[in-house]
Image 1 (cartoon, rainbow, N blue to C red):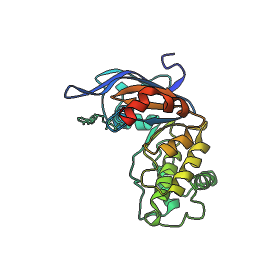
Image 2: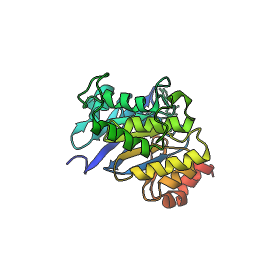
Image 3: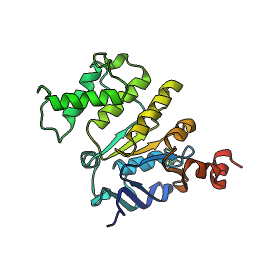
Length: 250
Ligand code: ADP
């Protein structure tokens, strides 16, 4: 077993841009059902790491395995998405002219594994699945609203719902609470804590209050200069001298 039972296994990854190593011998693994927070100062390599995982950027060297058998270095972006890695970018990209319900329905029908067509009527099981997602993403009762009329936070939740409905095996979230109100941030933390154990999720986030809320039972990885600087509970990484130095510049 090359991946040690992990859903994602990165080993000794290097990514160079004109000789500059944006990712510099990065080794990291995510277990099935884990909710992992990735933090680190600007330029640490967080975005580049996500680009490697999703096939947008090819590493110069290193190993990247998804599940037990899939070698990400041999797959393109589309193949990786179809294999079950779902990424949510920072800005919400919902269908603004469609209702909340229709957004979830469209996401479900875009899922390649679902044997349906765009105009087919949903069956009871599919309706139940959408209802469960609506409840999870705090949009129950809002299903008939146009997505374009939702708050920024609600749009982010809807997009998380659109990801979840396709049942990805690994979910990558890029700064999910950027631009959210404090109340929305708190509800997003609750939402993610509900997903813990049921989905494998990697969250890149700058909001340390939010990270503290979702990292209480999980691990935090601190990236710096393209490699892992520290990894452990929030308490452990906060107390780590190297982390303090990087964040406070002492
Ligand atoms: P983070 O997401 O942690 O802020 P990035 O992954 O965006 O960090 O960037 C890591 C480093 O790589 C930065 O120094 C950045 O300037 C550099 N970098 C990222 N993408 C490119 C690129 N396409 N060409 C050149 N340098 C890049």
